[in-house]
Length: 224
Ligand code: DX5
Ligand code: ZN
Image (cartoon, rainbow, N blue to C red; front, side):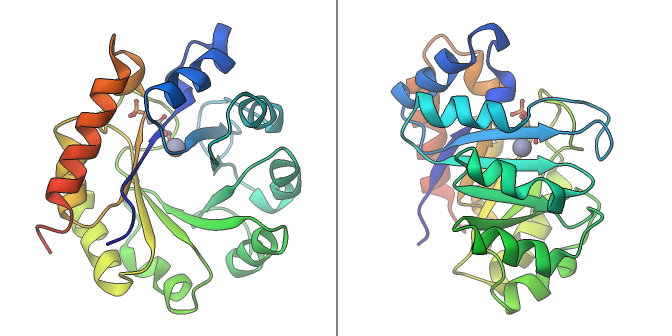
């Protein structure tokens, strides 16, 4: 069974105290920090650049899981690698040569990940899986661009299709994850859970994070 991990998204942290948000996530038991990078082109919103990854990597010792919601990721992977990313995820819908960009991420010594928007079919990443170009597949369960949206349950079949194709790959789920939806995504084969607003709005983040982990572990692959 692949590791179940929880990755708080600092998009939901207090931007006036981002380093504190990273440390709070670690104290609560986070396995990785998820950093949402948005360029205002691939998605309507603009968020963080490489310096935020640098800040996060300097603030905490756990891995930096960097989600590039940018139109041309190939132009930025070097900067994000140098900033201290551990995993760099690009979108299959981005304007780039996907195999080449994934290979470039690995050549920089980083884990490579591919991300799919809610409407993008599972089959679009099968080539990446069959050639083992990726270490992680991130399934978006909201339309990327903003935190705090509602979980789209129709992506669950896609998680299952990816898990059936590759039992070895890390499958992350991103968008609307809480103590109810984490178990559902896990049941379909997700093992990494990005959670932003749910975790950062808690008074007791540690208890909420432990609950997410328990839901995920209890339900992992139940619906496969
Ligand atoms: C959305 C981002 C998510 C976001 C999740 O574009 O990719 O990582 O932070 O936020 P919540 O958990 O609030 O849905
Ligand atoms: Zn994300």
